[in-house]
Length: 57
Image 1 (cartoon, rainbow, N blue to C red):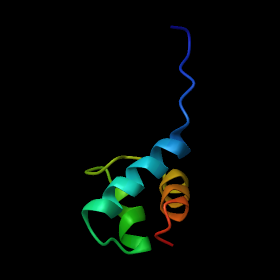
Image 2: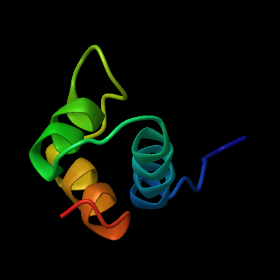
Image 3: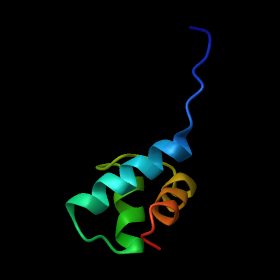
Image 4: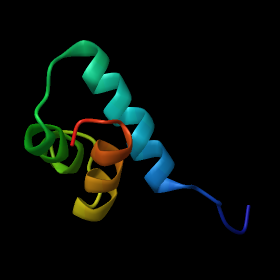
């Protein structure tokens, strides 16, 4: 494979929705979880996009 066409923003949305199913994250808490080195390691921009699209913000 020469390159992967991964939509990281869409992956962040899916991850955010899964976290919201498991627990009541605040907008800020969900962004922190998604971007944490102990969490999903999305960029802050991707994590923010995911949290907003998932309806947490």
